[in-house]
Amino acid sequence: MFNIFKQTLAKTAQSIRSIIPKSETVSVELLEEALIGSDMDYDEIETLINRLVQPSTRNRLDYGLLELLPAFEPSEITQKPFVELIIGVNGAGKTTTIAKMANRYKNEGKTVLLGAGDTFRAAAVEQLKAWATKLDIPIVAAANGGDPSALAFDAIASGAARGVDRILIDTAGRLHTQKNLAEELRKVVRVCGKALEGAPHRKLLVLDGTQGRSAINQAREFHEMVGIDALAITKLDGTAKGGAIYSISRQLQIPVLFIGTGETAADLIDFDAKSFTTGFTDAFFQS
Ligand SMILES: Nc1nc2c(ncn2[C@@H]2O[C@H](COP(=O)(O)OP(=O)(O)OP(=O)(O)O)[C@@H](O)[C@H]2O)c(=O)[nH]1
Ligand SMILES: [Mg+2]
Image 1 (cartoon, rainbow, N blue to C red):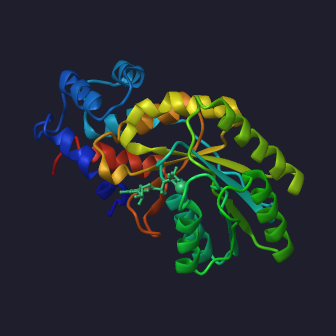
Image 2 (image 1 turned 135 degrees about the horizontal axis):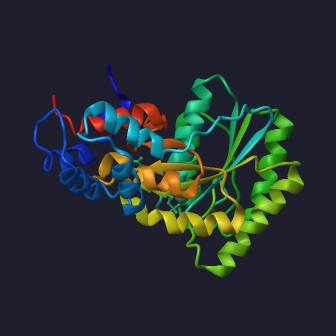
């Protein structure tokens, strides 16, 4: 059966295959080495290996890996407009992920509005505007250097007045260590709630997949800062660190919603624990 994650995990699979020989089973030693190579954190490697019935066959590994991932029930979206605030460090892939999500929602028949809330970085507004034009989606933007909270307020007010289904608000890249920018983000969140009760309904943290498990601490700090509801992991196509997803998901206990698989608007897939794990396990058992 076609597995959508297989292609995305190509680099991860290549690294695993360089360690694991073609066989029906895999030894604990080689499994450990390959998982370390895939950037899974040792906590998860240890847990998996301790639980794994030997010899490790495809089915046993598949089951063991799946058990590492917390199960999340997707909650139904009833709010209209549903406001999503997109957060993350510089260059994580926030703006591109917004374009991908907007494209997805539009294809599902929903109406979307974008808020160009990165008023800090030069050309950030232009970048989102270019996506809006390409996708033919309305955007609320102000001149660079404006107040991101005011922009968020305006975007929500405009989206509510137009009766759109979804509002996606971009934010400037920031490090969790920058205190003034942390305060600014908290203010954006507060002001969203003033524009519309309950907004932002989802605070989505975008993590750069090429950072692997080192993104866990970063995510923790953002979570403490504003409370993160969901994760998007980008650039998985360009990294051999696919195994880090198990540690990110298990240690943070925040659902991974999306996986970024490239630079175009179509390169976004819904994270699905089962298919992801099948794609990952496949690398260990070459056929
Ligand atoms: N290969 C690949 N590239 C991606 C993916 N997502 C984003 N990128 C690229 O990563 C770079 C940064 O993406 P942006 O969306 O501008 O990142 P950002 O977080 O908005 O960056 P700042 O606004 O500067 O903080 C761009 O060149 C994107 O094309 C992905 O899933 N795969
Ligand atoms: Mg951006």
